[in-house]
Image 1 (cartoon, helix red, strand yellow):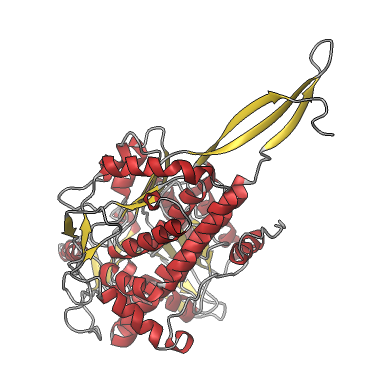
Image 2: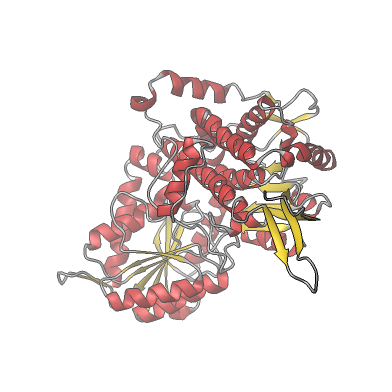
Length: 566
């Protein structure tokens, strides 16, 4: 593929070039180090975050009836007490529709340019948003700045680039001629107009609110649709900051800021179903639990619906050129953000004959389990490293889930290979932390989980052989959903079998990766996130289908004068 520069924005052109080659590119700085940014900008960002605490978060002067959200910092244990305007879906949908006309009538180039500028301005507030992510989602600062900052913005820019490509995929005018019967040929001038579908509802999850939020918002806006952003009640502030920045960009360009709105609900009075089934809702983007995601898919009706939910991500430990490096990568990925990511590994398969490397080293299943536990223990024993890798637990519900699975092991249903406990976080004793709980079982027992178990809970499953492990892992992905799968083996024939099996199961497969990059890192412009081939979701970040359902074509035909082309 070879794309000509658009001339709209250099950042857009670089994103298009990266898509064309599937090469590594980031349009935003991934490190929040003061060596790059100096000391004033990080301090100002932290102060800006702190200024939101205990205050009304106002988007415009018409808002009234402010209420605190359910936001409690996983680091301090204290409520943020930031107050947001009460939601009014009927009024907000009406305002979105009223704003849509002028936005849809703007040129594609203008919409695309403003979308890129929105992302650029959000990036300017990277430190402020990173602290908001930390104290709502529980991510460490490096992850909050990179994963929920630069990487999420890149996914947003990727969606803008794909929107540009799809809206330019067909010519919008043509001169058509056909001989029909006797006489002069029929000559028609044909025109097509890109039409938005209507207001879009974007659900953002609690643990990674921006990563799916930005691309959904940008794809909708680029295609002419207004957006109602519904953050999780426990993680409102990051999206509220982004929404306000984007509204300012729109207003500065002369557009109605009601094109982007914030809908804040509560656990006691949820509005998710109301928004999905609202008569004015035309598009739904959902990220969250498989249970509610399934409800969304079933009740979206004729609305365009894009989902990413959850699944059982697996690791098959058959063998490796360097067993230590392979186990290091597997454990580091398991511990990353305490397994609160949609791509975190959950189930580790160990064949009965264990793991072997190319130099004759052999680990029995008992030894593989011991090596996994040893690495987790070493990471947990280093508070500074653990804080950087594991972060905090977003929700107290996850701690309850750990207790439930621990009790299941103590009752004899599973082998308790490692208990979960908190690690000593440098921020203090109030930080909500948990190291991985690791349970063991034999595949023949039939007790392998059949759904995602969210949080730092892992299962080491002993299989009769590697073929049984592969069959079970692929079948699990196909029936219960999986976004990713990981495999370590030195046998090329087995690697090819796994490639075929996981392709049919719709799980992206990573083979034999070691080193600094986490196994579950998904690169914008290159990696495709979610296949739509299993129950883990139907929307892929990013490719044409993520865009094309967000607009339609309106056609007009008129007789063409004979000298029209002269």
